[in-house]
Every structure is written in C-alpha cells, then in structure tokens.
Amino acid sequence: MKTTLRHYTVEEILEGFVFNELEGKGLFGLGGKLVIQPEYQRYYIYGDGKRDVAVIDSLLKGYPLGLIYFNVNGSSLEVLDGQQRITSVGRFVRGKFAIQVDGNEQTYGSLPQNSKDLIRTSELLVYECEGTESEIKEWFRTINIVGLPLTDQELLNSIYSGPFITAAKEEFSNSNNANLQKWSSYVRGDPRRQEVLAVALEWVAGAQDITIDAYLAAHRNDRHAKELKTYFTSVIDWVDSIFTVIYKEMRGLEWGRLYEEYHTTTYKASSLTKAVEDLMNDESVDNKRGIFEYLLSGKSKTELLAVRLFDEKTKKAAYNRQTADAEKTGKSNCSVCKSVKNANQTRIYKINEMEADHVTAWSKGGQSDLSNCEMLCIPHNRAKGNR
Picture 1 (cartoon, helix red, strand yellow):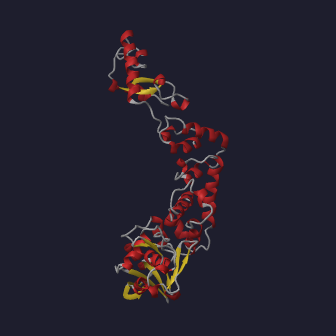
Picture 2 (cartoon, one colour):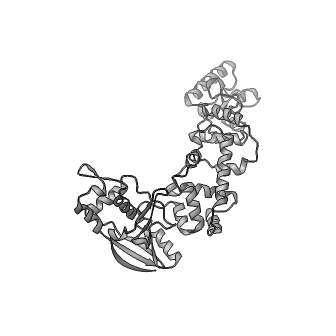
Picture 3 (cartoon, one colour):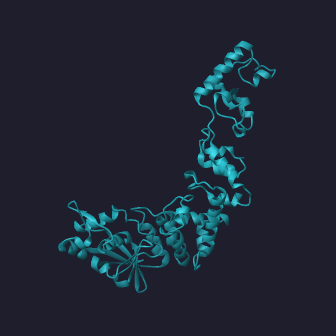
C-alpha cells in the first residue's frame, strides 16, 4: 500500500462540509471531494459534550489533532481514520455546539476573530493511502486498535461494506427510527455503535444456522435489507404478542433463539402475564431473566430460575428440629434413612453430611421456608428428582 503525507488546513477540509443531523454523521468535505463517513466507518459518537469539546480545546491551544488517514478512491478521498475529529470541528464551525472559554459559553460565531483564525488555519497532517480494498480495510482495522475500540459489528461493516450494509444501517443504526423505543424493550445496545444491527443479524443468521459473516457475505450486494427487517420484526412482534407486560429483565434476552424454538407453540397471553407476575414476586426466584424461557418451555427448565433453596439459618433450624426428634425416637435424623431398615436407620448425621430439600417441590408450589424444609443425607437427597 502506498502512502503520501499531505498538509491541509481546517478551512480546506471543511470546504463544503455537510453534517446530516437525521443520521448523525458528517458527509462531505474538501469541496465535495472528501467522503467523511464511508460505509465502513461507524457513526459520529463524539457528540457528548466532552470529546467534541476536547477536540476544539486542542485546536485553540495549538495542539496537533494527530495523524489523519484518507483512502484514495479514484478521484475522491474517504476518511479512513479521523472522521470523529473532522466531524467535531465541522459541527463546531457550523454552530452545532458550544464550548466554555474562561467560564463563558462560546459558539464559533461568538469567538474573537483571532480564535476563529487559529481554528481555521490549523494544519492537519494527513496520510493519503492507496491500495486494494483488502489492504485498505486491513489498515482500517489496524489503526482502530487504539482509541475507542470498534465494536465487532463496526468491523464487519468495514469488511462487507456495500449496498446491503447501507440499507441495513438506515434501518437499524438510525437513532431517529421511531421503532427504536419499542425495540429497546427487548434489545440492548446503542444503534450508533451498530449494536442493534448486530442483534438483528445474529437473529437472522442463527435462524439459517450460519455465521453473521456468512450472511453478510451472501447479501453484500443486495440493494435492500427486506429479509433482515422482516425477520427482526417477526421476532419482536411475537414477543410483544405473548408477553403483554414489559419488564426490564426482558431486555437483551436471546429472543431470536427463543423465537426459533417456541414460536410454533400456542400460548395464552393472559396466562403468561399472570405467571410472569407471580414469578417476579416470588422471592425464591433468583434469576428473574430466566422466567420467560422457563414459561415458554412449559415450566420444564426450572434451572433457568436459579431457585433459591434455603439459607443457613433455616437449614440449621431444620437440622436441630430433626436431630432432636431423632434422639427421642432412636431413629436417624435423615427423613429417608429412618424409614429404611439398614445400618443407617439409627444414624445421626452431622449437619455437613446433610442437604436441605423441599418437602413439597418448589415447582409444585412448595415454598423455601422452614415449614417446607427437611434435611436429608447427601446420598438420598441427590437421588431425589424434582427438588
């Protein structure tokens, strides 16, 4: 790959600068010659009142902004590295945010002329890179190791950039998409960091039993993302139809996998709603996030709930109660051993030789309290099912 060092002023870079507020990204610079955010780049994420302000503060103090890299793409240029810095400067010069100067809020327009000139004439060092697509994208991954790391999906976007990624990002990476509020009840992630898109791709690829890479490779040149959108919407609508009350524990669950496993099963939404409420209020259930799959599975996967058994105080009380009765009757303090005629029928176990068990199984309505607790010797307890 060939690289050439160029010197540009901020004024030159920002000639014809356009920032798309709807999509949250810088579009063009250098009089239209520079594409600030090619499809393999992530969206603008510096607009937090800290990192964008720090960029402007650096210019006003005469600090260099660091090396910037452009990709030579025919007669045009693409920002390989530096789009966050360029976009921050462009937004400030266009009056999109303010900074604090000597305790006073200042926009670019309100700065004294010498400060404006300092920003406008600041020199940016730019390496222009020429190479094959694979070379350019490998370099893109390399130079993004430092700083705020790229997410896995941001890297995949760079590898499989094309019309499909463009269409998919318009749907799943647009923070102004009206559907995001609904989606956020079930999907965890920042659309600007491509995390919602990553979930959508994980779901559809999983349904086809292929990797996300394989799915992106197969659809790279598609002009639309209809299949991706349709499948994602089907999953969301399915969840929304059977679990009619939203809980924070639903966010980030593997809804794509659950849809594939259970969407052909019929459920009564009102019954599920009551069951979820009961389990949410059950203090014995430690893993509230497991409630939804537990119910979808027909209550067959109790382990998903991490049901709390008995605390040490309860176990000790049950042990003392059973041991006292055993000493009076001359039988074992294990509820099973005392009823079986063998060498252990009269054995008194130490507490560390026993385990607590539900008299009535939790899955059958038994509570995790002293009245429903019995101590069994370890072999007999572990031989029982449906604890």
